[in-house]
View 1 (cartoon, chains in turn green, yellow):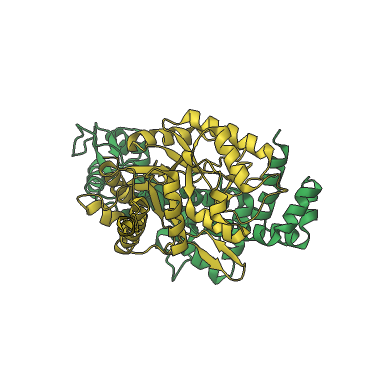
View 2: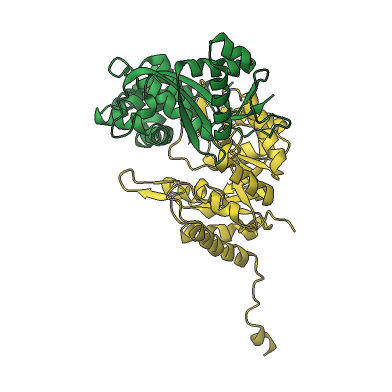
Length: 257
Length: 288
């Protein structure tokens, strides 16, 4: 039997994470416990430790919010200007989207929550895409290293396939999210195609692409041979090979096979 | 020579580049949380792996929610097992607490109810975890600021019963004990009386912070270790009777590596003194 332990944990999770949990608990801790099925001795214990259980709520919220500004500095700046950063964090925590044992997964959980909830996107239609791009930088920087591949050609040719670096991300947005800054956090609307990757020095890099180049790289990422991918999009083969050679020099592409 | 003795240091991000550039370890051993390393890459990760390949390391987990009810993710367990094998950690420790419920995680060390039901539940989870790991499993006593529900026993009795029931080792966090003794008004040395010190395999030592508004000491790991905590460490070491490794933790307001190593050195002196032979006083008087 683990009913009591389970009920206690379920009860205080409402206190710790729900937006209105603190107010309801502070108003009447016994009633808070009773509504969640706790017996009277456990209700009394909640009441006895009320201030310290509220301290736990603060500690949890600090722990869960702490990694967000490092990953989403522009989004945070935007929302702080509107005095809505705390409201955004509160709604995120209440959603209980943070489920992974890995602390680093708070970042993708935040993006997933924005996508699921649509929070703030009536006011700022670019919000999710900005958050996604800010997260992509962090994801690329810490993406697992791969063992070096042997036998790759260094020069692209029509009958070869492209071997991308594991960090390469072919990205498409409806806003120029890569141009947003803390000073100007609202990106202009407009189709934006980017290739994000990690260079040889371990730094995050992003290259702007045309719509055609992005479509071409998408086919290459799917495994098409270079000539077939270029022909399917009516691309000039020489230009396509030059693009690939350039991306190989920059580190986004490991080689060709 | 057994590297897992003396005073080690928790390996932290601000020091990675500097430590990786050294030709040999500046400490007897490091401690690291596998959750913060596995599945990662990039330059920082390469620095971590370089250090872990060169130096002895002990692993310490943060988020397995040992007293919780959520099933452990299979890939997380697999990654942990692989990491323990790669690093050749002599054991793996986790906190006696819960961190998640219903799939949602708090990343905070939350207190267990001090009840028989809670003991049985945690013992079962610990045995399950031990069966998953390639190395011995240790429980750490946590700082707790509140009791969760009506207690049927003391925290001391709860912790001892879980250790015995799970038949596992003990990571004695001396700072957590001190913090609890201050926050809940008991004597730390009395708390240790009758506890199964033979189960202690490792100790933690750290700083903490007093919050005036809450009238509470929080286990922040954000300050230098205070003398009473070092004295408590020195008091308990001879009672354990073995030079178990002590790990200096620092997680916030992290000082320079040089400052941290200087603090480690001072704790090491207290550690060495705790095992020094007691001088026989009054020998001259006996001759007379």
